[in-house]
Image (cartoon, rainbow, N blue to C red):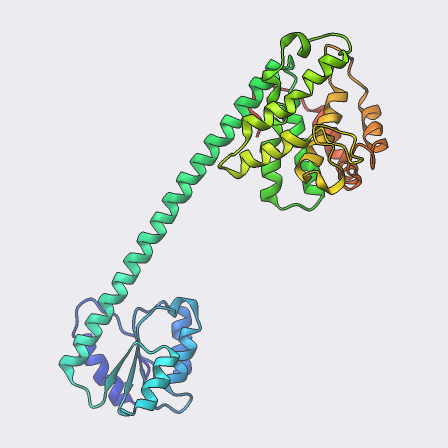
Length: 345
């Protein structure tokens, strides 16, 4: 209660205090009332209209400007019944009016109703907060399940390709480091990290004789091998989640080249999705460093120099620069022991 008249304040306190379960704070000056409101979340404000520091309309306006009082009922106490005042007060955010001289029964009824309204607001807000928490928990659960499926599928692809050395995990991590260095948002970096392991999902449709061939593939065999890109894109097409859609982009275009000599669509430059440009570097780099049936592993330093030498031809120069800037962290990643049964991420 804010009123510069001690007698009015005493009467208000006496009448309202007769109601059950109400705690009252009274202030003789508007500045003290605003200070008290800043310290305590009150559920109802009764403010006099005419006061020396500032009038009740200004007090109402200032209270409404504060987030905690956006919905709190504010009652203007006044002997002025003019429409002009009511318009000003309502515009400032007044909820209701109490006229002087006071009618005790009416005052108690208005306070009771407004406090009931406030209680309903609080309960509704609590319910909304509870629902928001439940939705968040359910969403986190769904995201976790989606991520688990992604990693288990990626691990199956890795075994299908004859590799159990953590290739998909390293590709995901290096891709994430490159994306981070490019200044992409944490959310987008995370998407790339999770989608990258599916870049070779189409290899499940390639014959074992070609996947495991110890020597160089013939032109016909190479043509078949290249079909893994199209197969993978078909597996992932029309995804309903952003993660699957990102994985489709990567799968479809991670063999494209910056100069347009890649496959399957001979895209060049910025026409290649950024996610695919990023994963292309991580994939080639780790493939160079890994032993395959058809080749021995390259020394890490040599593979690093090869990536840098292909800037502007095979790879996006900006992505290569990002790779180079994260090189110390990539080296540290390669030095970590690989646990083939651990799900990355």
